[in-house]
Image 1 (cartoon, rainbow over the protein chains, first blue to last red):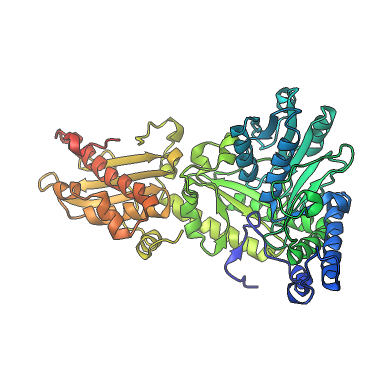
Image 2: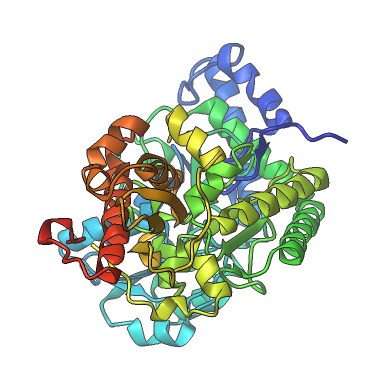
Length: 406
Length: 138
């Protein structure tokens, strides 16, 4: 079967909306368009009913109760709200926050802002496999620590943190535990009870739902978490997030969660099979390829690989009918290679050669085979063009060369 | 980022890819950049010592498409030129020819450096002093 080009394999960035989700959303644009906060007519009731169904669907996926789910504009807002909301509400209790170095910018930049406002933040380093070290976490805890915020799974390397263990440590110390669950929720089992999670940020568009909608789980008992709102105006969502609810988006997020819950066992097995096919295929055809991040504790749909001696952007240029992303500096505005790979201890030279493959619901084995062929072809061509590959083949240790740098 | 047609063309059909013998007295080799910066260019030229004409040029580049295109273009331009003519090639000429965006100007700077470094290496082999202005300085 011929594959349809271009191939989308960047599902950590965003996912296409599942047609079943689109179908569920459609009536809420112009047929059932009511404001969910309109309590006195049927249009409003229809909107409210749809929102409550979605709340149930989201809660069910993560082992929460519907009252613990509030809807937001997306995971960036959820991350901001869970961190700033706790920081402001519990400021008198303490001013110390613990996070990790490879968090998403929605968490890191939020923590940076809080530092300017007088909070102290510890950025835990990660191990070579991209996961938090529990002993280092324990050492970082202070009497003034009010929040630990760690991502469930990393968006670049797919490394899955020991969330349950971290949650246990947080609970023992009476510290709130906030988790960026964007890449994990809907992909692997997440259970806020078993994992001792107090706050959990969820995105719609990473799980085949629409963009512009997200959710935040806020624990209501053992312990009850209170949040200071960051958006005022009407007191929607139990006062934690004002603003007219995005009913079609929320319906879509709910439906996406329902599908994810129903299909997760089958889908994660399929993702793993595709990922293994991709990894084995590339390793069989190319020498000097290296996997970044843990293979044991990893999202089933993620593969992050460095193709030594081939710069990432030039590689992307050669595979322009395949959508993936690179940790190379040249693909970012800053000219710095990926901070995530750097934090793992991946050398900057190898960080420049990394490619992230994000498999998704709609990828096929034929597409994976095409990607293997194309990658092999382009990497081989670029290595013939690479002075570093030539030097390595001559037996020169690249790391020992004295480079003329700016 | 969208690439100019010329960058894409050089990337798809790079000119003068390869290596010359570093040991050859008439070959000058320039190796500039660093792997951790994401760009390394190797530019080599075979220069006729009687006429000072660059008779052959080869390159290999580790770097983005613009870096590959800049070095490919550099080999095309220096071929057939005298050493003096080649030294007058400026990075801004490369920027203009390839329509490089500001974020890619460093690729053209690296290509100019590679030309200077290769000629400098050749001059050294022939006992010719390299003026400060021609040295790769950063």
